[in-house]
Image 1 (cartoon, rainbow, N blue to C red):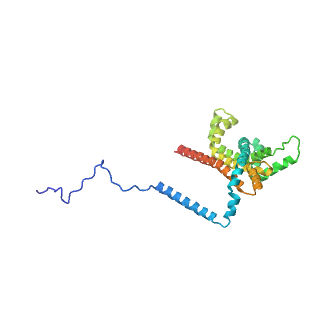
Image 2: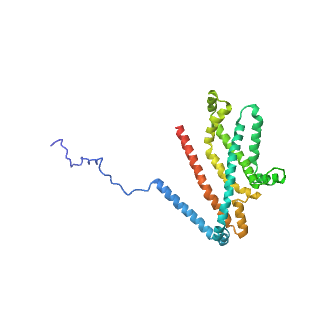
Image 3: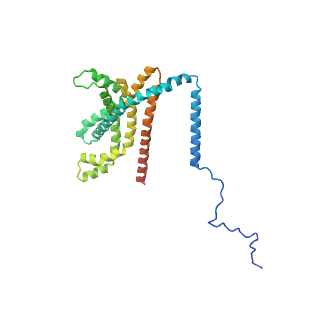
Amino acid sequence: MAGSTDPAGPAALPAPPSRGAPRVIGPPRLGAAARSTLIAVISTVVFFGVLVAIVVNAPGWPEVKASFFNGEVFWSSLPSIVRAFWVNIQLFMISEVLILTVGLVIAVVRSLPGPVFVPVRVLGTVYVDVFRALPGVLVIYILGFGIPGLALPGVPTSQFFYAVLALTLIYSAYVSEVYRSGIDSVHPSQDAAARSLGLSRFQSLRYVVLPQAVRRVVPPLLNDFIGLQKDTVLVSYIGVVEIFRQSQIKQAATFNFTPYIATALVFIVVTIPLARFTDWLVARDRKRQLAGVR
């Protein structure tokens, strides 16, 4: 019939598949993230495998292994080294409390406006500049040997005391700058709003500015205290028997450097979790700031 169309003719189109019909696909491909992870794992294994192969095949490896990786010396010296680390913990905890207090006072003093506070601002600036410029070992030497050498009546002679004092003076200079950056990051409108509500300048600083500033600088403060934890070994130079000094004693007794490896492992076990916690705080703070911007 004219005008009729043959359904089986060449003009006929195949019926589209129904929406509910299952879709035939090939084998699943490895995602981009999984490929990246696999490549990273393989490259890491290859890199460290090559590095280990180079080290263990070096001509002097047997001597280095005997001097630094002696299992018997390691296990015999580890208990006394771990016990000595308690001294480092005491140094760290006492110094940390003092550093947080002194650093905050210096930061507040340097942030005080007005010409009447110029002398204390100058003193604060000089303190920060001097102790940031001096090497830590030099400060520890001067305090640990110089002040007791004066033989002044009533002056402490404990080397532990001067170790805490030196660490406090050194790190307070750095921490005060961290605090000051936090104070400067608080918008002046916060202080103006507090003053308009009847608060004095010091009340505004205490109840409005400082809480915000301290909360913002917690991650940088933790980074500074990671450095403080490691720098407690510097006080061994004035005779404090802490972990590093104990490893020196063991090394001298055994004529072997393996106690230093034990000391290094103790610091790795303690410091790396704190570093990862600091990174987590920094990432959380960054996400919070981005969420606030949006």
